[in-house]
Length: 296
Image 1 (cartoon, rainbow, N blue to C red):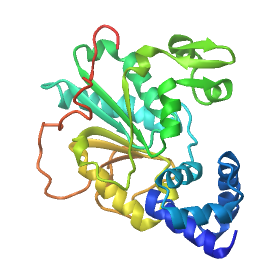
Image 2 (cartoon, rainbow, N blue to C red):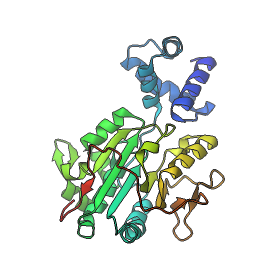
Image 3 (cartoon, rainbow, N blue to C red):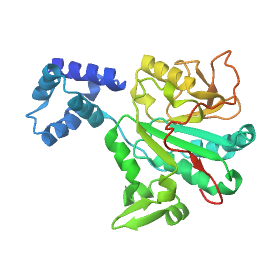
Image 4 (cartoon, one colour):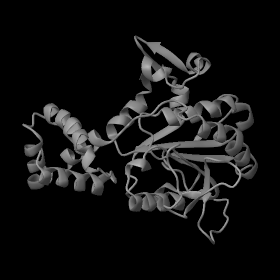
């Protein structure tokens, strides 16, 4: 791969996905896109770049973006955000939203679904406290491929062993050969949609809780600031925002600020934002949110 080809791919990936690749990541481009070339019977990275330059093949561009997108995730990853969700955010929302009894959650980089399903299992544990509540968990990702995996809810033994407590495995999963599938009840709680964080999201309405974890680390600072400012626009006035363990807002943005009492929890930092109980219209009007009864 020539320097010109590498620069072209770096620019394309930054424009399409926000991914910022240093020169040290050249090996990663060669490795991942080499696999893509073999799958598509393209002679190499040079011919791949030539096709992208001359043909404007949107489908091929999407395939390049998907090949380069990191989709590492696991159940209850880093634990602290899920403890905050269970012990701080949910009690807060139960009190604040008691009048309209609804809760909207957005997993803004859902990957293969473990994060969203972890939240759903926590909510299932609290079913008795949420009887009659309308719950929406929206999961979005730039990759159509990983969203298909998330919809299927089928995980390998290796994936299951990473963070999932045994009691939740026995309660919510069934074994299929050497893999495990999460229950239809839990899968039905999640709505999965393809979405690029660089694109407008105003039609989503507002959310009580937004998780955007372990994706901003791959962006440069201007892109991080742009994405966090856009996500802040989707956060309800008294909402909660959760980042990955290695991510921070310090020196990047003031649209999201650290909570003064709970480390790892963030709030809307924009000034002059009016309080409003309205949470915006559902993400998909054709799909009603889950209504929690004696069971989720």
